[in-house]
Length: 181
Image (tube, rainbow, N blue to C red):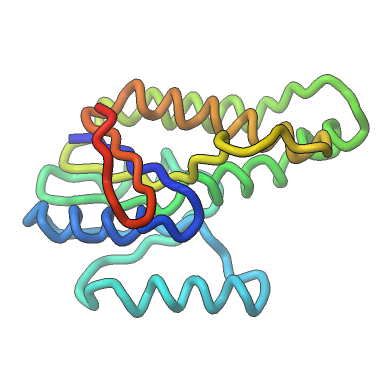
């Protein structure tokens, strides 16, 4: 089973993903994409860590998500990826796309396209249960800055592509899940 859980910031999406991972009855491996690059992010990571079951496995992979999922997927494992939004940001800022967007150039980021395609191709093949958490960023206004527009566009495209290969898609708002697929 593949499932995508979407929502805004502090919507309850991660909590719902943790509940579903626990309910799966499988061994859970938490795949974190965030890095503690500053004090505020360190606090966020600690908040998530404190909520998790202590016997869950942990894999930190900020860039090569497809490889990490391939390595840790098994029939008796539930992989919980939190979150695709930070992963996308990590990949975007590790390549040339951000510089191109700021310079007003047409964006063609091979690294981002390759990483996204690798994830989309791999997801249907993985054994076990995979839960992916992602932010829904398309409900607001179109950002003014080119880099922000690039990010919002790529996040929307990523969410659409992941949703297409998932068996279940849930939108969370105010802690309330709404099944989309």
